[in-house]
Image (tube, rainbow, N blue to C red; front, top):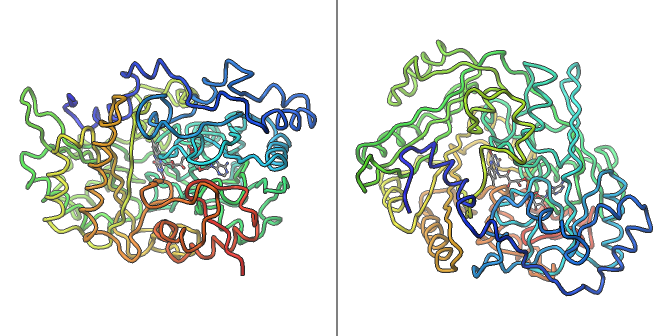
Length: 554
Ligand code: FDA
């Protein structure tokens, strides 16, 4: 596989692979083409509630649009192609419902439940394991929120109501259209859906100043398993706590969120500087210094790092490159002073620093061309600078800087052929993250976490052996990191779903003890409270997926 010669190209390359894959064009769905017993019952039930919903249901039997509706928000092509790999053998929905109103969401829940059909909800479709649209268990109905994506900003109260089907680009666009000094602290990728993102936490470039997306929610509307619409007061504080980071498709369907907007300066500093190391030892030195300062910098400053191997000119030899994504809520003069005091090893110069508005920083970190206006965000679903490769992700938390031997071990693995297009992303904590209690929301990685590592491997090609080779590589890297990262339990980020950590039984009859294995990696001590909340809001475990929290009764 030929590699790009810069890491920025590499990130785009990682995400662009499927467009070079002819199988993308041959998309066909590994679905059940045989009519399912409950399929007619479901249609009858939904259509008897309301005529309009009949036109919003797609099945492989009744609609030629089924495949394109399903494909539209599949953001990990590992789970889309009908190929020979193990990943593609998952069950696809027997029906897709795309409601335009909340009552239609309620009807879909009630009709699915009445006819014993499993239901999954999809907002932006970025689940790394495809859990919103591909199942390892029974046939299911897909409730796709693609038509529920309005965003209403109220500047005086610094808040916004945003429907879950909105993607981050649409949320950011609405906020920027209403105010130049308000923002919402959420992810970097414009096509991530609000529904899944907040359900699993949500970090972005202002994490150290304002915390996670889930820390900035004032209210929500939840459709529960009985089809009721509950706001914060009606659902109660326990459920409101659980839906802000305790995992998607578990407590009900969040149809909208009331976001707490944050104040940002008119101009801030946002840019990416890349450093190519002449040797692995040089990269070790730079990253070693980075990990010793990154969580101690002022809250206004966040430096994320992407590290990968890139081609070196015309030679076949690969070198390591680190792209430092710098976000500073202030001007470049002050930033340069801070950097020269705290992290001179980066060698930041005035010409590296770029000042812009918050919304321009959104465009920058989403890889839009520098002359783009923010209206491009409205086209992000169909015309995005980011598109997607077959991908496997894993995550870890670092509480003590990795020793040099660990860094060297990572680099040697990144150079291996099996790594293909691999990337490490370091996300610093500290700042506001260490002042929020570890039980304030289900996300427990607060004080004591220096940074999170997200690692990815991406590939093209349809053969099972190719997939296995890359999966093997990332699993071995995860194993290698065991002694160096958080322990007892080892940490993982819920929004970086990893089914290697464990899974519910396909029947849904998973015990609390069984689910603790991965549940405590995502939520630590908060897992037990989540399971009790689950028992209170959805005792029959209607909302479930491979890693949903099972109910724990008193
Ligand atoms: P999707 O629709 O697949 O949903 C994910 C899960 O939530 C599923 O289990 C689904 O059923 C459930 N769910 C969805 N909508 C729901 C609703 N309304 N109510 C209840 N449950 C619901 N993360 C991050 O923190 N910062 C970042 O910068 C990025 N960047 C990023 C880039 C790319 C390219 C990818 C693929 C992923 C990320 N992520 C991320 C991870 C992302 O936050 C995570 O995958 C989210 O769960 C995606 O939410 P979606 O709604 O897009 O996914």
